[in-house]
Length: 328
Ligand SMILES: Cc1cc2nc3c(=O)[nH]c(=O)nc-3n(C[C@H](O)[C@H](O)[C@H](O)COP(=O)(O)O)c2cc1C
Figure 1 (cartoon, rainbow, N blue to C red):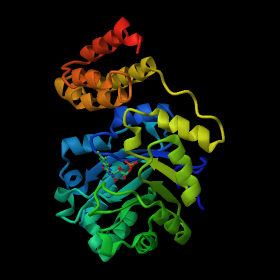
Figure 2 (figure 1 turned 30 degrees about the vertical axis):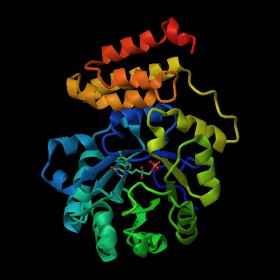
Figure 3 (figure 1 turned 180 degrees about the vertical axis):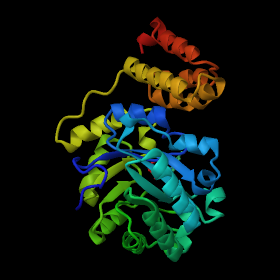
């Protein structure tokens, strides 16, 4: 299989999934430091880009150290998508541009955005062709297996996207109507790998380093994309790489290491997203994830979910190591 156009020197690149509200610059950089080879922005609306909405444009920004990175856009109007592609290419020069055909959220699919397009594959083709014409960056696509069980045709969708000019194809093998229920059907990824000439990225239900290795061996995919499994666990990239290279999995991070990375992540968030209450409130979820599975985690999480400043989190972490917990 061809290598990914934006990561050609890498064997089985590990990709941090685009995730709204999560794959922002601070978390991207943390994941990169643990071995995420490719990063992506969260999905950004072509209409909002056209209207130069500040928050959306901020979502397009990245630092040079984040390369290779892709900007992901979505929308149902080929012309708006082309204009957005042209603008983000000229303004931000990402390593690739990804089109989101997977988002299942009602607000998005109602206007045929995200996986809404999967009900009309002619429209999908027009969108891809328009975007390909508008940018000189490689255009990639990320999609689900279909709209619903009756229209579950991943290979047909994949072939049409390839014909329209996509340079890589990511499949999250669930239908739109499944949202996140049931299991991701990795056999469908294998079928798409078989059918396409362009590289295929496997995505869906990667929770452990073993899952990364299994995704590779089960499907023969060119790259593995990790979403929810990375929450509070950027070590997943390091561990997955070790297994792919036939090495032993490194020892799991200690509580101190986890807190250390959580605080490093917190400092990045304050620096990059503003030292304000909003940043702290939005960061609470990450603190909860970093402490998952630790002895006393639920009490810890309850306290972390109430912090109003990052220094409170630091204090809570320090208190964790006072004698009552070190015995645990
Ligand atoms: C909170 C959240 C936000 C997401 N946002 C996006 C997005 O902006 N663009 C996109 O293509 N997929 C998005 N996804 C889907 C993920 O990229 C991925 O396809 C899905 O979570 C399956 O992978 P996983 O099982 O490893 O999490 C999102 C998923 C979650 C959980």
